Amino acid sequence: MNISNLEQFKSDLTNIACITLSSKILEKRKDHFSKLCVDVVLNLHNKTDLQDIQIIKHLRNNLNDSYFEEGFLLEKCVGLNMPKRIENARILIVNTPMDTNKIKVSDSFVRVDSVAKVTELELAEKEKMKDKIEKFFNIIVIQIIYDYPIQLYAEKGVMTIKTCRF
Image (tube, rainbow, N blue to C red; front, side, top):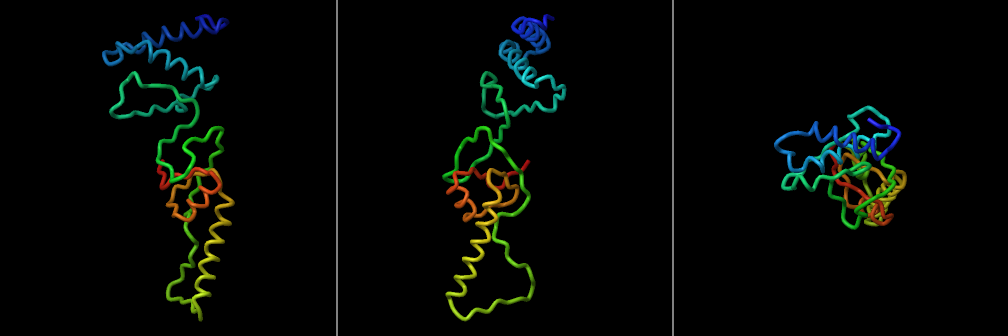
């Protein structure tokens, strides 16, 4: 193999991959997949951990539809009015519920003397949620996200994915 000339090196690797991919399933698509393999491996930038390569299979797609996606690919439905694509994203996966933090004490009561006080309590809960949301932008939450937090994210143009499992 000739490492000094990049094009020749890629050609040599493609030929090796082509020989390695000799199977009945890939026979007609051997060139496509050998080039794909070389592109993926060269993208590892001298890392040798092949665990960094993930193959995602789609039912009902043709083998010719196979492609190399550089970066992190997460296939989930995003919330309403959310951006559909984020480039150069910084992603944080958080395991905390995005619901209002209700006091979880059994056999306790809050007594109010007017509807205005109930509204005041509800607004205080919403404000607390808003403060929490301000701290977590551009994240993936692996617990449920309710409508009000989704609304706050949408107002900021931040993508949310409801109930994401890895």
